Image (cartoon, rainbow, N blue to C red; front, top):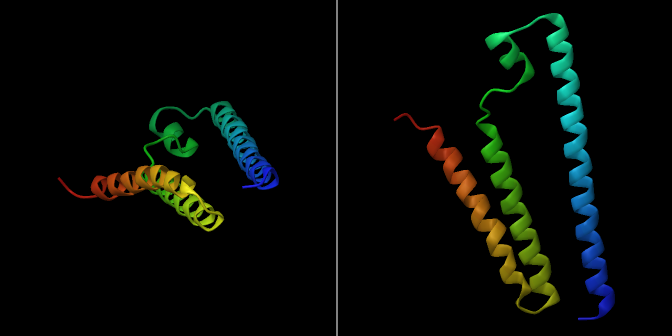
Length: 111
């Protein structure tokens, strides 16, 4: 593999990670602003937790799982066509994503 392909891959991964960190930080800032506004209104207890969206979110496991499955399949697909054994590394996020989806499925069942 030539050094241009390797450096382009590393730059692409760095770009993806930096955009993810930026988006997470912006969401965190907006959540804190929302919580501050709700506190100024005088909400407390269960009303505050529901309005701020801080309760247990069942969809979060599904979202994480599908994201990891997509990353694993994309990594394996791209690196398989480039060549070499690096496509096998796509199995780790794929497996973790499938576990998240499985836990999301099992969490919704009645006991």
